[in-house]
Length: 163
Ligand SMILES: [Zn+2]
Image 1: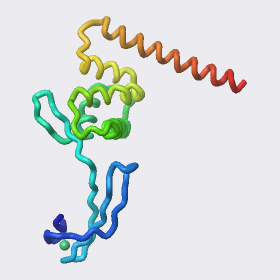
Image 2: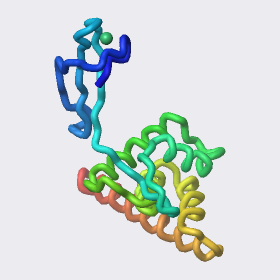
Image 3: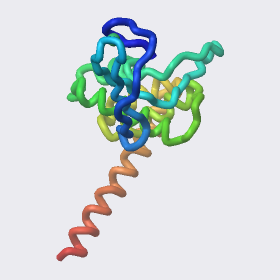
Image 4: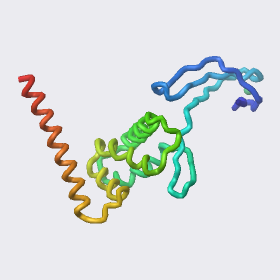
């Protein structure tokens, strides 16, 4: 690739190392013309097929924007959102698919969002899963409550075991 400083048409790789748990490779390059060094990051491309059939590159920023609205007024920081988007991307890359549809992206957001904030999760799920009645909300809340109770049981039995 060309040098970002002098636009020379070639560069030499001086060092390569994997980053982000092996999901990307950083290459240190040097321009033979001006001698300056720069870094490139290589990742497998991850594409999203939209409902319209249009394909676009996966973007963490779009995940953040999609979730931010559901988090309005909730104790969720921009850092939390960035971390959530990172987890979503890692999970999606973990599936090994190079192309995902918008539905899979939505599904992969639900788990991490639920851990982050249950109210934001319900808001997001209500739009994403097209809740159209109070019963849909009730059903989701019942599931959340049941699983929360299970988690409490786990905590209790652990402390029993220690005692
Ligand atoms: Zn150069």
